[in-house]
Amino acid sequence: MFLVVHMSKKKRVQVSFTEEQWELIENLEGKLGDSDSAVVRNIVISWLAEKSFISNVVKEEMKVVNQDGDTSEEEV
Image (cartoon, rainbow, N blue to C red; front, top):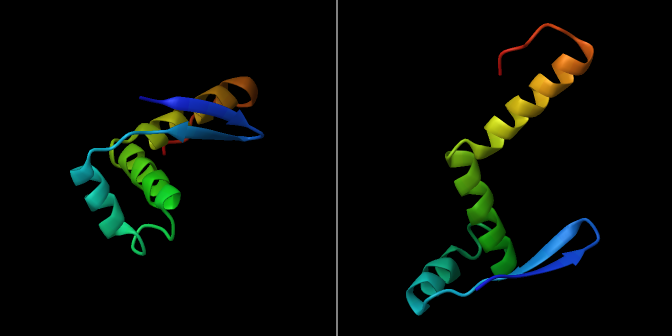
């Protein structure tokens, strides 16, 4: 179940975890963040980076910028 609440430049999302999942998250507190929300946020960002979603988005944005102003493409 996900609940998305729009805030100025931020979004709040309600997520449900099993007890086992929550134990794993609690064990990461202090290592991946100082609060529950920071740990979950950092897990998501780490997963996105690991799967190359973040770098792919940046590469696509660079192509658009290069097409708008410059015809040369830089490799990332």
